[in-house]
Image (cartoon, rainbow, N blue to C red; front, side, top):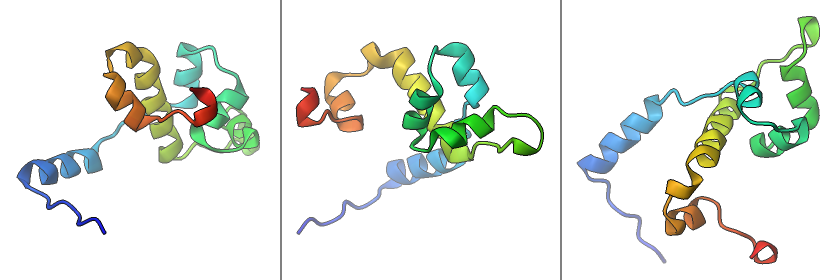
Length: 102
């Protein structure tokens, strides 16, 4: 059985910083920057294509994306923009490839 690591001041500071982080990107901002389909955006946000379509509707059919969806888009933007700068070991920890992708 693994014993959880103790949190030092550094880790406590990082948790506080991450907790207040306002990292977010709207679907429109993401779509303006990256040539993605609604299906790809749904896959990135782990939601249905119907949800994504409602983010782009006007009027009563509009549903705003959640802060979690916008955080996924912001993280995907960082990953797409800075992929080569991320050390391979860290890339594997962030997004491990399945056996079929290797």
